[in-house]
Length: 175
Image (cartoon, rainbow, N blue to C red; front, top):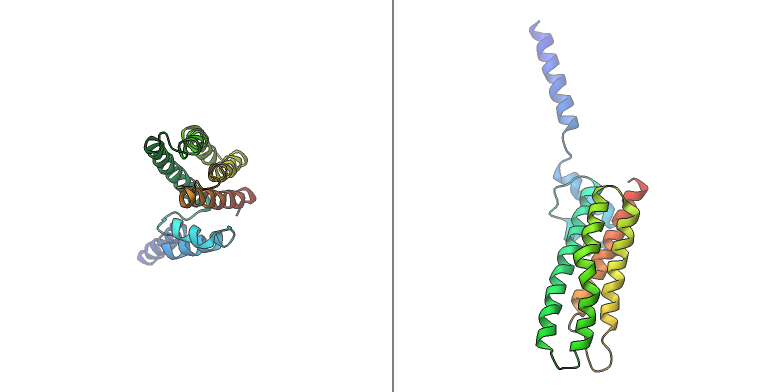
């Protein structure tokens, strides 16, 4: 009787261990596998590395939230610059950038994150792709001698968005 209880306990422990979440090392392997399929491997790995999630959807969600966080920060930065640039040649292009970023930050990206959570990957993909295009459009507002004070920020948003799109496409394929 004692041997059968002991065997049963070991069997249950074994099943429990096999069904437990993957360890962080395997999560790092997943991040590496996923990031190799994105256009900006290093940015992807640096952005996702401290993640404890072990599935592609968790990684996609983290990247999506990073895009929103950076876009929000950029919009706040632009709004501060608009106030400082009042009456200068930078005022109009900065105001145009704010007009591009406001709907992305306030409506589009939050809806895309919700769609991602609900498994509506096509919509989420479209919105993140559009966020990249809006950052690029903002950058194109500056011409001639008016050098963009937003180049690094716009490039980061565009690149993060492109990584998010790539990860969502992996989700769509059922990785």
